[in-house]
Image (cartoon, rainbow, N blue to C red; front, side):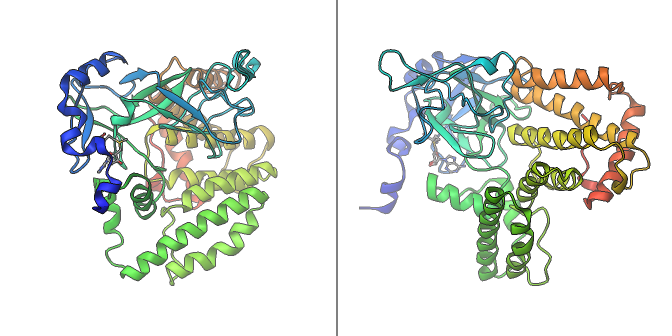
Length: 425
Ligand SMILES: C[S@@+](CC[C@H](N)C(=O)[O-])C[C@H]1O[C@@H](n2cnc3c(N)ncnc32)[C@H](O)[C@@H]1O
């Protein structure tokens, strides 16, 4: 039998493509709570089959649609801990896609169904994509939703999927013009093209040719094919090393072995700092430092982890920004003098922290929706800081100037190039 027939889903073979039955498409779309009209049509992405399109412009901060999945399936090992209806995880305060459990949620419990005793239920959650993750990356379950599953992949997606209170919400990551196809990222958006492409091939059976992939692959043009293979291998080894360091809670595991791995790929010793998984690894190391009370080291790694990331939009970006602000706040709450930073005054540290918190508040409201528990929790964190800390509302021109100056100093201390600074929006 033709190999291709084994791998291409039947629904994507042109005679069965869903967009060919517009009566069915219209009926399916009628089941949604859609904020703006949508259309199911042939994808503009070559060989991608059917896709989902917006009919009108959609602003960043608006929502595409909400839908109740046909099936939710909790991952093995989590059945007693995670709600079968909405994936709330009773032991986690923050989901991977960024939801903070609010005061009202903390009373929630996951209990067995009185009737069957097999399913466990509670009330709310927010997730990323159709795979449901928790903060440190392990998977809680999977949802099947007919309309959301029509969204094709891009490594620079204009939408993402979250899970809230038993519903899937599809939200934009930026403004989308009328007639454009909605796309989401099927893999870890912060990974490099080599890793993304191999996962997409392995799990979704296609070669991604999006603009971001093509741009990134160009950076490998100067390398021989065998060297590209070595880079990929080193990336996988770094991921594994990071995992071990996190499991052992020991940064030395990473710091001592990483140089040999990076040199194997780049013999001159210059692994590009923004090349995945380096930024994600620095983020993980920041958490280990934090757990051991090494707050300056934690902040330095978190700054690298955040600012070296190439993709600055969507739920992942907001979640990382949240972590960065937390590292800042831990440092400022516990150390009265931030002497090693080269900052002339502690006040400048506070200015950067307020600026980042302001940015986090703005991004969280637009990305997840200002009515979500997550955005509300960040808003009250911001209000507390501004009121109790006496910080100025970081929107004046004078504040932005002071923020930019203070951030530039901080980046010199952290060893991050100034061009990677966060610009307040
Ligand atoms: C969840 S389905 C998306 C809906 C699908 N296009 C359809 O017609 O039913 C995922 C499949 O769509 C195709 N696909 C999604 N994004 C693609 C892309 N960027 N390039 C090529 N194929 C893609 C792949 O075959 C993938 O396994």
